[in-house]
Length: 446
Ligand SMILES: Cc1ncc(COP(=O)(O)O)c(C=O)c1O
Image (cartoon, rainbow, N blue to C red; front, side):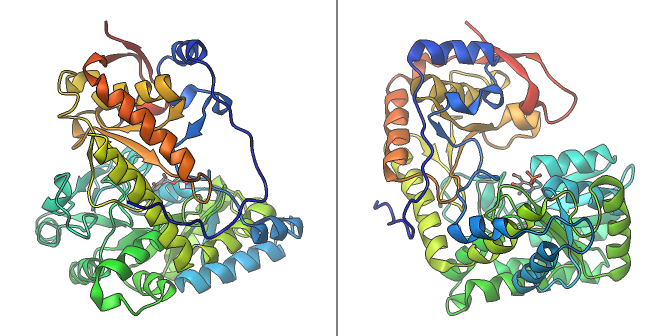
């Protein structure tokens, strides 16, 4: 597997360093074996998340110098509004500081105690926001999504039959299509699947909202994997996707290629107005929604840069390179490679560690111990008994790491594979009431 050539060169550098083994052990102890609590300066390669962590382009940096920081009507907002229109076709978008601010507004507008939501698989913050409003969530990905090595091209698809059954039998308040499906392995949703899901929703008068934070990456896969769209531009696929929904929200920290930001938009003017009322209460005025003018500039430029096919080809190529190299090193991986991360599944390889002792978290800790590389567990620690897989996710920040960085990660995982039987389970010593993985304390079981 070849690593793609980067379609850019590096102009600004940020030093990174590798703490020695003793220090790494001490840091793990002091962080209570929770990788979220490790200072980033003590991380050599940071693959914790692709959210807000990527490198900015020279056009983004230069746009920030001319940002307008006015409270009402700043130039930077009109530029962002125009970019969101060009990207999505939404004429009256609402800025938010990041995705979960939009999730809270959506929850407040559509949900109540006992409400029911259906999705191809909700992301953890979306689920937590919805559940905090008393909603019950049904994740219904297609059956192929539940296997590791089925190479179905669109494992992010929603199960259309189950969707129709649920809409017929239950009073569903909302359907959310997550594109790509982060929790299920960064897998794309076919545009045709979205079109059919929206047709079904319209029949039952149920609103469909797109979680669009990785819609450019999703559209790249639609172009590559569905021959019907092979001649379409990425922009046309993105814009077509937004035609088949009642609204959308997007964390700009992903395909907005920005460090901060997001938007929320509805086709219904009444919903838009009510969302604006809540925005002022929680986020700020409708012309900045928790963002500085600089954030809005960077977002406006980054959003349109994410449509560049050469960039998307390189990005998908990096994920593919890492995924197949980890497989070659012996690990079970989610196939086909998805959009923003490689995923190792450890249920078989670390079968000596029971689920209650968090086998994927054990590997994530070991990866830090061996190589000062930070990844994240997406398994029983994050999702309790709802976890379908025991994943370690290697999320690749955008335009940031080179082939040698990824080769260092691969070598580290090769070494760990050779002594995988030595890995031990963990127990929780403190957990918060929701989203426990962010703040939990753990200790190894000896
Ligand atoms: C699919 C998905 N939806 C929503 C979010 C939430 O976005 P934010 O982190 O900007 O609040 C994320 C963040 O990783 C995500 O991956």
